Length: 457
Image (cartoon, rainbow, N blue to C red; front, side):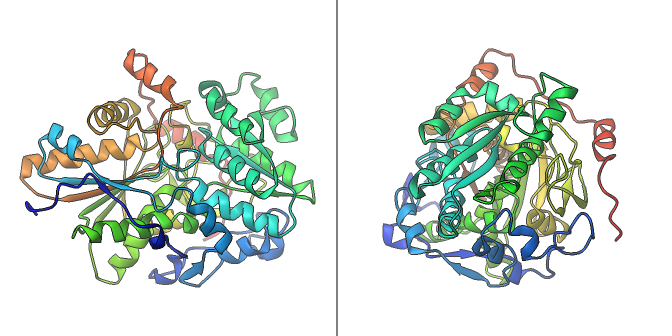
């Protein structure tokens, strides 16, 4: 398409805001395995989830409806930043000398600088409707905690956040952002919960993990009848809320006459990846397009590429239902890499199921290559990415350079799920040569999987 107009930004009018979330489950060749009660090993029911989630979210979690209407109240808040822009990466393409056309959907324009409010706003809305007074949660890099604090402030809810210790130490401005929106933030593991005290007793300098922080937040919420728990990734309803990203991206690419050949997304728990790709998977299953869909995860936390597909707890203390997912073991504590939002031991059950069905592929990349890609992107496109999407950018650059070698004019799409202006400490580590890659060995995997529950096939 040599005659493609030289447009940097592709925008949608406000009246093109999606009014429905897309649920990929009804379109899949087979349904994903259900969550199981850890005691009975039977599928969990609404009563098992009711102590943590409002019934509206439980219904979405198990829904067989293809589309779920977005409440008008949520749409009104979405309009603060949605529809988000898509950019053609002309500067990066020119620097790479590639015939590939690279597009990125930019979610960093939200009030907290990431894609996370796409689900924090509806979660806060449904909890407020159900009479909940306080929401507890965990956060890694702080993007999710910031998003939930923002959403709670809009609906008059208290917000309490357990932030993974390594990120709490590395990213003080994320904590300040959460506190500015009214949240109480604790370094995890903390001495405020039974599970936190157990991990601190083992190691007073514990760097934490998302699994441990989830345990603390769930423990507190379960003991307070006025409190609920909110999760920023992994669960079906969370990924569904994020599909506004992919629905807008479909329309934006169509407006310039493009169809993607390759879609790339970073993966930690799976919400950004699912939000971007699920609408395109719908189109693929309907025979309207056939892009390669590629997940990219950290080499230090490779749940898809090295983990096993089996039932495991979503948290470290074993308080959650058992989820069928690609897991490194709920006891796994990742190295304190700078992409704090990708340091989770498991992959979303839906994303894991799609991987098993062969509808997507996955690779892992070390953080030094990712930050090299991020610096090149910043110098050619003018945006400093959050550490998490640097993984997708590195994979995009690999693919674009391959196109340079072969002469293929592929269309590459990715989601830049957040900016990195509160993550500059990570860039300082890279710029000064202090950043190192963290290896993940077979011995690490064997040790991490040792405590995974044995669930009969």
